[in-house]
Amino acid sequence: MSQSPPTLSEFNAQVASLVDQFGPAAFCAMPGERPEYTLFVEDARVIAEPRSAPRYPYGLHCELRTGLPDDQVADYLNKWLTTGEAYEEFLGMNVCRYNCQD
Image (cartoon, rainbow, N blue to C red; front, top):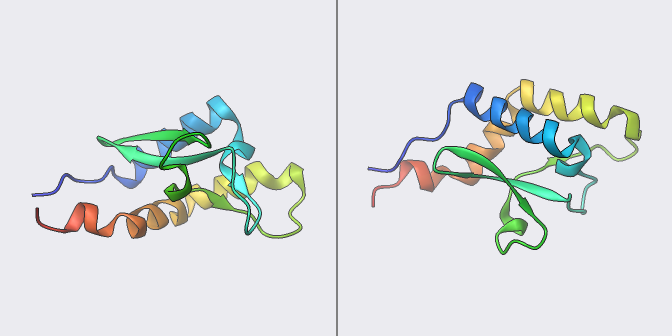
């Protein structure tokens, strides 16, 4: 049986901790661009992958609205987390990882 993903609250708390550590802009990018870090879950722990990591291109990040002022990035990222959008994107990217039989 596949392992279980972190719960929504676990995921959000871990992402919030990484945002506190690296800053909100580190996980956000405009459409067609990539952020400084992307998010992965490894052994039920959310980790930040830097651009130099091989799996970086396949990680999760917050895509900003075009024209969003820099001073609104933190609020936009917080909304992405608190509405569950980030978690839903994570689950969508990992559907087979958690739902397929070995």
